Image 1 (spheres, rainbow, N blue to C red):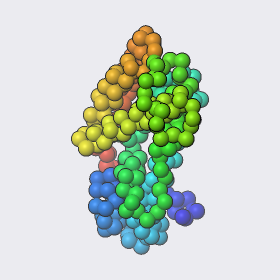
Image 2 (image 1 turned 120 degrees about the vertical axis):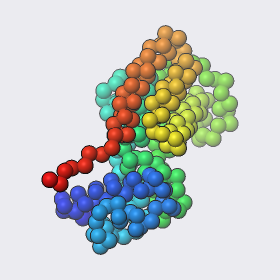
Image 3 (image 1 turned 60 degrees about the horizontal axis):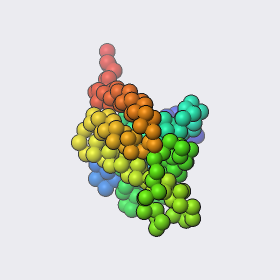
Image 4 (image 1 turned 90 degrees about the vertical axis):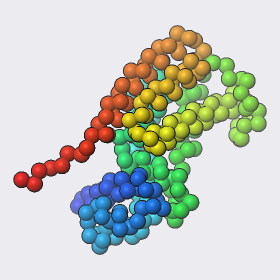
Length: 244
């Protein structure tokens, strides 16, 4: 990796511009010719920074990780309520997925990790740990999930309550992942409505107190408008600078 400011800018440019190719075609479908052409650089300049498609894929996933991990730290510093923090965490993740092509490309590349000859970040354990912690902090607000079949849940933790919380976290994450894939397969503009519907259904089952559920549902409803703004900006064509 180049340590000069110019080299770092070129490296960032390559990552940002080739993300669109990986997002559209995946690792298997993207050719080196397409990737080089997307950057506008010469093949030599491209190879100076990335000697293979695998190395570029690894860098894109690394950037995705760098953009995702700070979300929870920011929320813990700004939002004391763990249930609101959980809703906001899913919003920030959805905004990144809708508005950041590098994050979307990284997500697709991680699903194709078996084709890539590099070690890629495995995001799922981090997500499970993070959501489980938020649910644990919010336990007083949660409905009774003791009927979940958690006694045989694949967890090393002997505590039944923790197994139930992990099971719930994995259920929520599976739903979020499904929403992302449905939106990406159709139109990203559909994400806000799917995100809102998920929380309208889920909160009424998650919360112990109906009034608490209703307040959180109103909160999610307001945030859906924010996500619509993000999706709208992402759908706008890029501004091309005048050559005049």
